[in-house]
Image 1: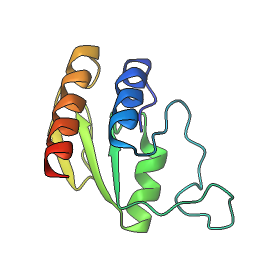
Image 2 (image 1 turned 45 degrees about the horizontal axis):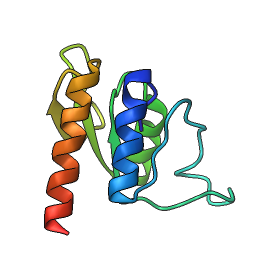
Image 3 (image 1 turned 90 degrees about the vertical axis):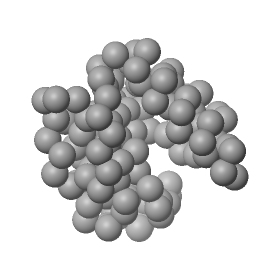
Image 4 (image 1 turned 180 degrees about the vertical axis):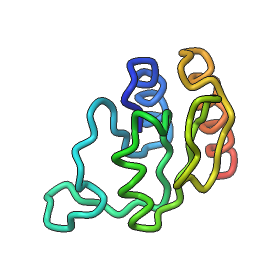
Length: 110
């Protein structure tokens, strides 16, 4: 999940290489909790690029007990996160680097 403009391109490439679902832009509440929606899916892991702006999906993932990973800067609150990745989540190059490392390790392990 990435709501900021800097996260859209790295998330699109991550989704293309790994084959996972990505939410960019505004997150519509209920996609993780409302089973009556047509596009409802159960997820095992949620990665948020900025816990401050992506708090809706973070709250829903916490309610469902889904493992949450957050890229956090010094001004982020780390409540409701299972794993905190300290990174400059506002910089375009740092987000690209983080997703490159995650993608590379995931593809090697798979």
